[in-house]
Length: 249
Ligand SMILES: C[S@@+](CC[C@H](N)C(=O)[O-])C[C@H]1O[C@@H](n2cnc3c(N)ncnc32)[C@H](O)[C@@H]1O
Image 1 (cartoon, rainbow, N blue to C red):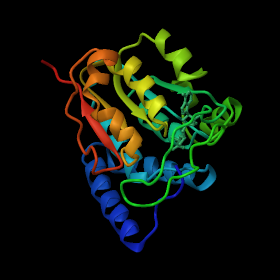
Image 2: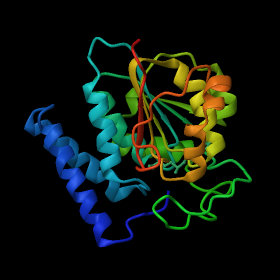
Image 3: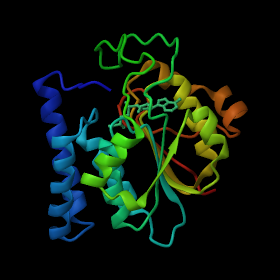
Image 4: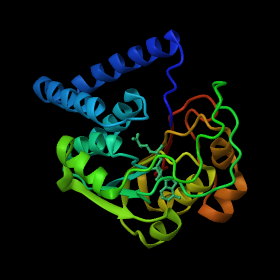
């Protein structure tokens, strides 16, 4: 997603959010490790195009750090672009000794006919999501992760989600979607949500796109295609980063 920091107010709120998250991080890992981690995250942002808010990445990173060590399950990222978010998540996966599985075409977005207009925050997202946008080759992503992240925790699954995800069978402790399209979000939910363990989480960074919101709100889709009742979705229709926790019951 293209930069959304339109105003001073947005910047201020992102800074406030970041400082809250850093406080939280400080309570989870020793200060030296925290400094080192934040420095490495900044390095990624300096050298790799990163179309995300740092606070969204930190929120998910903190989620990874919160998974009880005895809990089974890998971390999944759907949508890696040039590997900026991947490199950052790989740092958290390494710290917690978890595998990070990355799904992407590595050819950019698929051709599609989705008619995106404005985000819920009012800015235009027309023409953002044409086929081929947000392309990062597998080689480029692996190079960026090897320079700034932890390549050894990563497994890359190349191809269209529709083709690769149905074959995936690993238990998922935490999943992060940044896939822009409603159709891609549907495919991710259909194939990944059933693999999320009880107590596990799924985040989407596309919670500000009305067509994506419509997918999350669609009870028939949850019932008939995902195979469960629509869960509670934290922040839906209000926030960019939305979160679902899989119930333990
Ligand atoms: C906005 S970019 C991800 C940005 C990245 N998370 C970051 O912050 O740097 C969206 C990504 O989703 C991938 N993508 C979307 N739909 C897909 C599909 N159906 N199959 C495979 N890849 C898809 C694109 O290739 C692209 O890399």
